[in-house]
Length: 186
Image 1 (tube, rainbow, N blue to C red):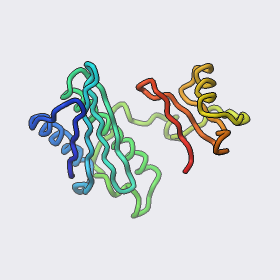
Image 2 (cartoon, rainbow, N blue to C red):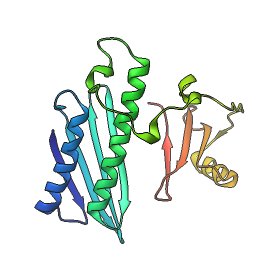
Image 3 (cartoon, rainbow, N blue to C red):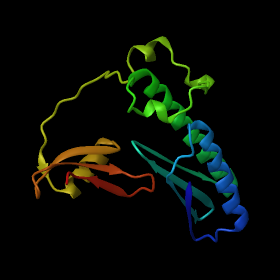
Image 4 (tube, one colour):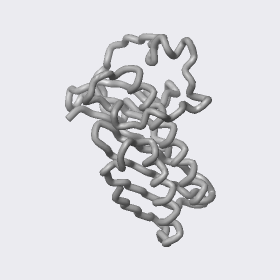
């Protein structure tokens, strides 16, 4: 794995770099061989929050997690736990769904045991993605500012609308930092 460790408002010390490389290196045990991919780590300090974002783009799979904590080393440990859960979740789904030689199944080792909290219950075995409610509504043409106002009035985290400028279906959403994002087709 090739490490790209960056710091915002933070100097990456050799001890911090070693800690990240050691912890991320432990993820290799989940794979048959050493994944040939880049590991992008972004560490930042905002006020008293230490934030770590790790992205590992791999063939047919993207692992990404972020975590905030008052201690940078603890934030790294929490992010690694999230990544381990993602890997186990992918492995469980892959083993259940895909049975071909070209699938993701053969990327993971088979002798891993599932985590206790991730042992599927009878309901989960029937269908991983059960749709419990369907909503239908007309997409009113509006601009992004009006869509954000509508979203805030409804108290939702996202709002689907027809963009009056482009004519495409767009989504506005509220980000964790309190600002807004826009999703639009290419």
